[in-house]
Amino acid sequence: MDTSSLSQTNLDLSKLSDYDKRDLQQQISNEMQKAKIQESIHNLTDICWTKCITGGISGGKLSSKEETCTQNCVERFLEANTAVLKHLETMRGEMQ
Image 1 (cartoon, rainbow, N blue to C red):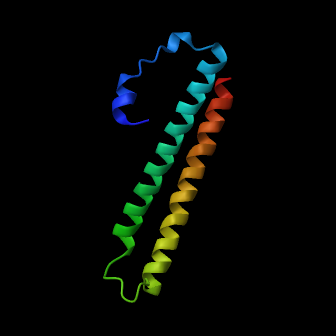
Image 2 (image 1 turned 180 degrees about the horizontal axis):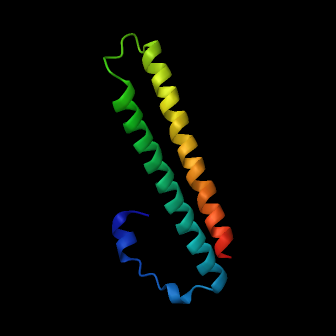
């Protein structure tokens, strides 16, 4: 479907069944989660690149110092995210 026919399509969401509405909400939620993950990956890449890549990349490889720094940066980022998720799960459990 091209853009012109898409703009001509008039969607009436009130005509969807309850099942279809829930399915649509789930699909939207999934897409939002994917967008958040992509944003996190972009932020991780930006932070670790800025912190660890100090010179030009020669021969298509990082120096051993840059490689170690990047690996540590990614590990710290993942550990921090895991800690935050665990804390949020704990808070959610306390609220129920």
